[in-house]
Image (cartoon, rainbow, N blue to C red; front, side):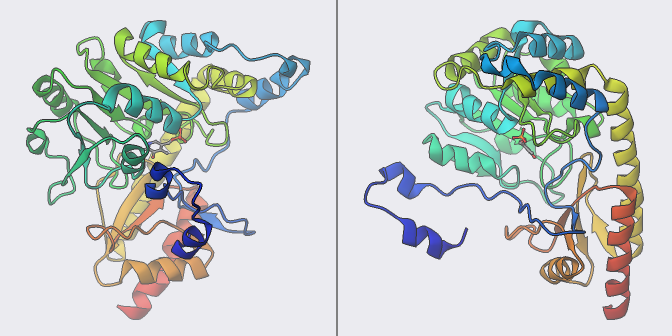
Length: 364
Ligand SMILES: *Cc1c(COP(=O)(O)O)cnc(C)c1O
């Protein structure tokens, strides 16, 4: 939204807090025919047919009833899938909503919240909304999290892992160290992209009473439109989230979302096939882009952050757009010469590489 729109709409009736909010800007969702959409890390493959069948079955007379406020079936399926107890699982209407409860229930403390200078850009927005002090800790020169830089007083720590928009994953050995160095604070690992990566911090939960892991059905499970997210942690952390949720939106997940998400967990075959395909396409795309002069950060996610050696990212962004391909370009000074490109289907990525090769050959 442009600044002028905001100015025009400003109102004397707003609360002081609303006046000061800087809302999150989601990637655009343009309705253009034939567009190749590589800007919001959606899955190029649709959800499992079993998910669609389960949603269709739930689309019935039973919609007159409220859904199960405890989402027991879904939580049970998630507990079985992750090897945890049901009281170590929380679900919400998207992981963005789960994160909101996390900020309110666990990260709002008497010292600043720490997160990287480059990470999911929703965190600073929630800090404003929930009036939480924060300190942004710079990633190192390789765009990696330097855990020593977190040796300071804090009310909690949060980052995405693999991180966004870099795609780089912090190894579990370092997450362990970080959790040990801050025994009285919660360490939140946002694993929105973990299914494309090698390891998950869920395996640390039995060992640490201060690690909370959030995940989502939006990316790896092809269900961004269904809005289902979850958190895993020891029962005392989950209970904090339940208390916030039941003070805000007890029926957070609707009946269709509950049915679809539960069915998705019962078709892990389909799920792992999609992931493998996307990871193969990622590897192929990275080598094709490197061959035409791009540097690509080592990604364990379903997107890559890439910089061309001679071409400006802002110009490539516009050029791609004029060829009906949209990617993401961030204004942040450290990465304003990079493009973040979601991994689409093989065909889509081939088209991207073809279009870029032409440009990079003709002008370099
Ligand atoms: C996409 C994303 C989310 C939000 O996921 P939803 O469940 O769709 O709200 C959270 N964290 C990160 C890092 C993401 O990229």
